[in-house]
Length: 237
Image (cartoon, rainbow, N blue to C red; front, side):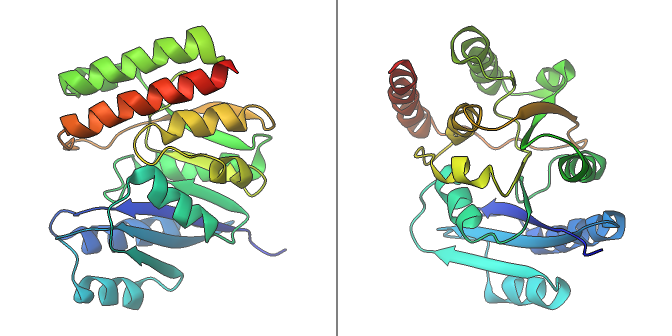
């Protein structure tokens, strides 16, 4: 029986030092645990201005057999980057996370196994309550606000919409490509669209220890607030 392919998509913007080595190490660990499926890696460079050299790309190509690099010059945001990656995916299953693989390997591998063998079209990572004990204040406020909106108004079968680990089968890919938000709130738009036609379930995930959260850009936060208002109005139509 032919093993199914799984595309792991990583958006990349101004990555930290040694990012390529960390990606290769993470991929090799996943490959060792895959067993019943074949992991492919797609990295989307979202207009980085630093941190990426040709030697990094060569290193990835030389150490990852199933590797695809997508590059464009203008920074467009995580949502745009992932749509670009998903649009070029050809695998039966897709998982996306961040370039530093912030979630434990068991979380990612278990999600893929469940996606392949289970009955869900979309699995959304759900973080435990102790996640908020180590979260910067502004992130905590935003996450809890979005949870209340999701529970009270959007009726999505997932309360934690912003966890950076999600998986889908090829059918649900259509819903992802229908999203329009370019930055952080694309997740909530994706789950809302996917919930109309596909089966979605939360999936418990754990962050690795010593994960460093990036600082929130207040200009982007303002833009996202406008995006959220537009999105919320759209859901009322």
